[in-house]
Length: 354
Ligand SMILES: Nc1ncnc2c1ncn2[C@@H]1O[C@H](COP(=O)(O)OP(=O)(O)OP(=O)(O)O)[C@@H](O)[C@H]1O
Ligand SMILES: [Mg+2]
Image (cartoon, rainbow, N blue to C red; front, side, top):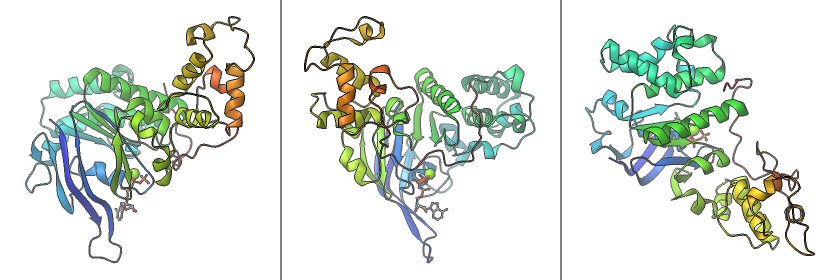
C-alpha cells in the first residue's frame, strides 16, 4: 500500500526566535515499488521530509499515512512503523555501536522480539544483500572496518528489519568513486530483486538519473516538481532557477541542440547522447565499438569528430563523469556543470570497498 503525505508542514523550534519552517504543505503519494529520487538544494527540506516517513519527526501540521496507518497519530508504535519503513541516515556508520557486526545488524530484529533462529537468518540475509560475507565479517568489530564496509553494515542493520520501504539519505556521501559505485549497485539490485520501495535523497544528478523511476524535486520546503527523470530533466531552466543542475548527458544534449544538432529532446545519459549522435551520423553504436570500422565522413556530415567539435563550440561538457564513453569523451573540456552543492563534503578518506 502507498505512502500518502497530506498537507505536511514542519516548523523547527516553533514560537522561538529561531523558528524555521522546513516543509510547507507538502502533498504526494508514493506507490509500492517506486524508486523515488529526492532532489533539492541544500536546506530545501529533503532530510526533514524523509524523516517524517518513518515517524522520526512529527509534523507540525498534516499527516503521513503508511499502509493505511496514520503514523502521525498519538499512540502509534514506532516499532511497527519501522517494520514498514526503514530509514538509513546520512553517515549511518556513526550509529554503529555494538561490539560485533552480527550484533549490530541483529539489533533491530531483536527489538522486534523475533526468535534467535529468525534473527540469525535475517542477519545473514541482510549482510548478503549488502555484499558482505557473513563468515568473514560477523565477529569483527564494526570499528575495524573500512568506511565503505561500515556503511554497508549500517544499511544491513536497517534491512534486517525487512521493511517494505527503504529510505536512504545521501547514501554515498563521503565515499570514494569505487565505494559509491558499490553502494549504488547494491541499492539498484535490492530494488530490482526485492521489489521494495526505495526513496533515495541525493545531490548527484547522474546517480539519481539512472536509478530512480520518479523524482521529487524540492525547493524551499515545497514540492517544486515531480515526474520521471526524463520529464524532469527537460526542465533545465526551472531546475537552474532553484539551484540545481541536470545530468551531464542532459547538459550535453541541450548544448548540442543549441549548436544546431538535431538531437531528440529528453536525452539524459551520456550513452543516450552518444547513440543519438551515432544515429545522426548514420552508424550504430555496435559498429562504432570495433576499431577500424568507421566510415569516412562526407563533407558536412555529422561524425564523432565533428560532433565533438560541435560540443566544444557549444561550450563543452563537464569533465566529472567517471566513465565517459568514447564518442563524447572527445568533446570534453574544462567547462563545469552547474551542479548542486558538492555531495562529498564529508570527512575525506572514507574508503570504498567493492
Ligand atoms: N534540527 C533543526 N533545527 C532547526 N532548523 C533545522 C533543523 N534541521 C534542519 N533545519 C532547517 O530546516 C531547513 C531544511 O533542512 P533539511 O536538513 O531538511 O534540508 P536538506 O534539503 O536535507 O539539506 P541538505 O542538502 O543540506 O542535507 C534548513 O533551513 C535547515 O536549516
Ligand atoms: Mg539533508
